[in-house]
Length: 273
Image (cartoon, rainbow, N blue to C red; front, side, top):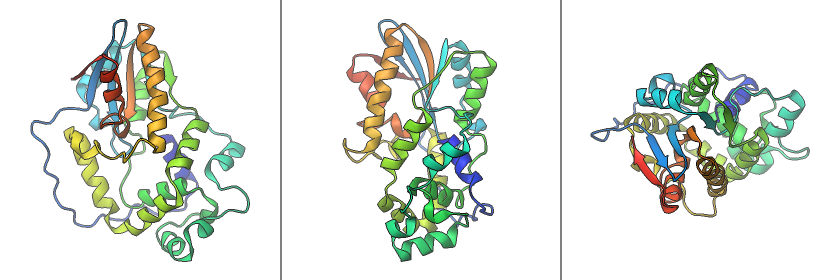
């Protein structure tokens, strides 16, 4: 997701993020544990580190660095540093000709979105791009997040690197997941977005599973199809006898539809490190 954010922000003439309102204090669980798991099968294993687009290098657990250095390959969602050609960017980021956000959202919601986001050609951006820009106005997302710094470490260590998604896969998922209705809900929730993101980052740092465990409402959501496809790829690495370090967003890992449950159901040993 970070690469998508960086490219989306490149399209935006936004000023800095809006100062967050006074937020209710988050009470961390005790004792907190990092979001780091080991999945062990008959032939290979995975060390899985959770990522969050609003968390940075300081939020990588020390144990994760050590596990990455020991691993024989690195696996992540999509190439954080992959350049996208301008002609491909338009197809990935903008609505098809004849469509517009004002048509999809209606005049009122689009006008409210426009009051928060000053971006050239906003009316023709896909809903997920507009949502990314809207979120960036409410919280100071790091320019180099967890996924990026872990990938840098893997490259420095000359690890074999594989990605679970192509850019096209990632854009197709976001197209399906972020509907106009999802964007409209976020627009209506704008005054609370900064506090909600701050709370989620605090919960991520505390290793609080409960905050993230029930975010997937049902098995028919696009994220479940994505998780299932990723499970097949990761299961293949274990079957091949690989010992991989995997960096994946926390929302794909925990809860009843998450990857960890799928590995446990397959009979693999899943342990929190």
